[in-house]
Image 1 (cartoon, helix red, strand yellow):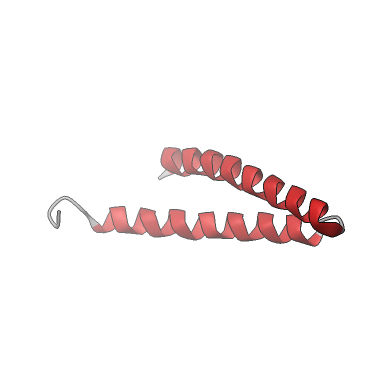
Image 2 (cartoon, one colour):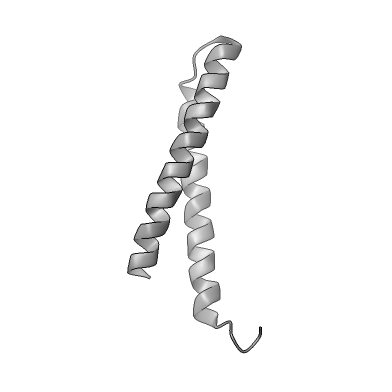
Length: 68
């Protein structure tokens, strides 16, 4: 394992994890800030945030995989 993992692999993993964290926090803060009142509005905003985060992470991972 030590001979197979390079410092570039670790660097790319850190870039990806940091960028995914930023995407998740931005989307969730936006959806939470503009959630409608009541339990139904909060549950709808939560579902939308999860779906949007999943799609954005897949797209961003493809982009980073192509560039890095």
